[in-house]
Length: 176
Image (cartoon, rainbow, N blue to C red):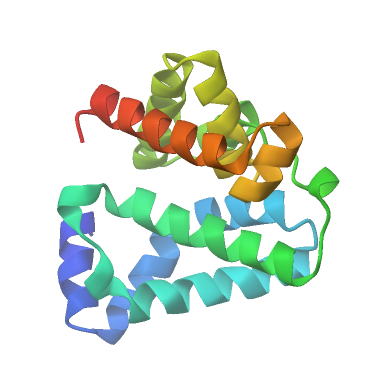
């Protein structure tokens, strides 16, 4: 089943679609979640929560803003980060670097995963060193903007401005 066919079924809330969705993406999403959430049992709970969020919030997916896989990957990453924060994990446990993230996706057999992961990494490498550092902290290590400001020893407003400018630069590279 193609991704477009799957999306049509999900929008219709076809029960078979949930099974197809799970079969197509569970392995790669679980890999991302388990790197952040070290406990396998908790990672499985997060994965279940992710699929429920995808199912319930499919109307918020906008194809013009990005790929479906990127959208569900962000849901998985954000849900895992929420789990970490709810358990009061400290920053030392947030050690997922951009390189590890790409290697994780490279291990998957699905071509769509490879395109999303490898493509983003190459574009990030084109950014200014400060942008690479901020994106790594905020998006790959799961820091809040306040935590990133403390880590980099710069004002919160500067982190917010750099983040916005860096994301705009990334969008320009991606032509999104």
